Image 1: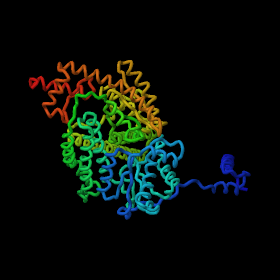
Image 2 (image 1 turned 120 degrees about the vertical axis):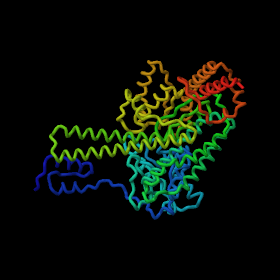
Image 3 (image 1 turned 180 degrees about the vertical axis):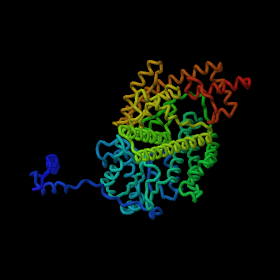
Image 4 (image 1 turned 30 degrees about the vertical axis):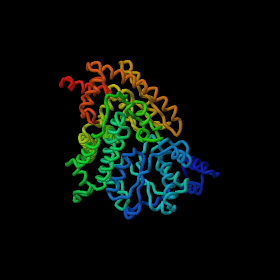
Length: 570
C-alpha cells in the first residue's frame, strides 16, 4: 500500500464527500479516483472571425442615444456592420428578470432584456430564422472584474440567451482595463490603438453634445428646438465619422492617433455644429436649479426607464441636470492604473529590502524600475492627451460644455472620508464629486443614482454621511439625495427627488433675486434689453462666474447689467 500524509487523506475524504460518494480513505486507488474529478470549464464559443465582418452585424447599447449613434457611426467608419439597441424599457426589464438569474442588479436585467427583445423583433418583424440570427449578429460589450456584479454580466448574457432560445449567440467582451491589445490577428473585432482612438473620440463628442443639450434645453423658447437641432448636429458628426479615412498607414494603427494629436481634425465639424446650435433661441432669465447627477455608471447614463427617466423629470420640474461625461470614467481608469503600478512597485521593493541584493538582483531591480516608469509614463501621457483633446473639442463648441474635473482634486476632497485605494464602481469619485460640486458652489443639489443593492455606491453613501456632517458643521448646507433604481418604485423615487429639488429651486430663486437686486435693474428691464439685443438670446454666452453664485440665470443678469451700465441701457 502506498503511503499518504494525513492531510492528503483528509482532503481526499472531503472531496469525495462533496461528490456524494462514500469513501474509504487510505488506498491508492481511492486517491486516484478522487483526483479524476473534473472541474467546471466554460463551454467554448464559436469565434467571430475577420472573414465574417462583411456579413455579421455588431450589436451594442447601454449608453445615451447620442453616444450610441456616434459609436454606431464609428464602427461603420472602421469597416464593421453595426447596429445600436434601443434604450431599454420596462418591458425589457421584465424579459431580463424572466431569463436571468435572481439577484442580479438593475442594469443587467435592462440591458440583457433589451438584447433578447431586439433579437426577437428580428425574427418577428424581419422574418429571420434562428440560424440567421445566430450567424448574422454578435453582441459587443465591455467587461471588468472587481467587487461588483458587473464582472458576471458576460456569463449572465449567455445564460439568459440560452434560456430565451438563443443558445449559441455570440457575446464579444473587451476588458476596460486591458489596454489596446485584446485580440488576435484573426479576430473579427480587432481591439487596437485605432479602434480605441475612434471609440474614445466618439464618446468624448457624445459627452460634449449631451452636455450642451442639458444646458440649453431648460431655457429654450420654442419647445423641442434643442432636440431637433442636436439631431441634425449628431447626423453631421456621424457622417464625418463614417467617412473618416485611415491616414498614415505606414505607421500602422498608431498613425491615426498621431495625426489626431498633431492636427485638430474634429474642430471643423464641431464648429459647424456650434453654428447650428447657436441658432436656438433661449431665455436665460428663467432661474433653473442646478442638479448634478452622479452615481453608478449605467444608472446615471441611461435615459429611459432604467433610472425612472430622471433627466427629463428634473427638467420638467424646473431644474437643469448637469450630466457626468463618460470621459471622466476613462481618465479615472488611467489614474487608477498609475496608482496600482506604484503600489505594486513599492510592495516589491519593501519585500526585497529585508535581504541583501546581489549583482544579478540589482540588475533585475533596475529593469523592474524601468518597466514601471515606462508603464506609468504611458498611462499619464494617454490621460494628458485625452484631457487635451477634450478641451480642444470644448473650445470648438464655444467653451460651453463643462470641463473635466481634476482627479487629484476629487481624491483630496474624498480622502478624509473614503480610502482612495478602494476600487469597484466609481471608487472615491462619488464622494469627491458631491463635495466638488457642492462646496465649490457649482450646483444647488446633488442626485446620486444607483441600482438597488449596488455595493460600491452603498459604500459611498455611507462615507457621504460623515462628509455631509463635517461640512455641515463648517456652514455648508449640502443638498444630497441618493436614489436606488429598479424595475418598480418610480413614483416614490420621483417624489423623494422632487422634495429635495423644491428646496434647491428655493435656493436658486433666492440667489437670483439677490443678484438681480445687486445689479440695480428690474427683471423686466433685463428682459427688455435682451429682446433688443439678439446676442443675449443665443445659447453661447461668455458669462464670468461669480463667487458663491451657481445658477445660470443669476450669473447671466450680471453680464446683461454690466452691458446695460456700459452702454447707457440703450
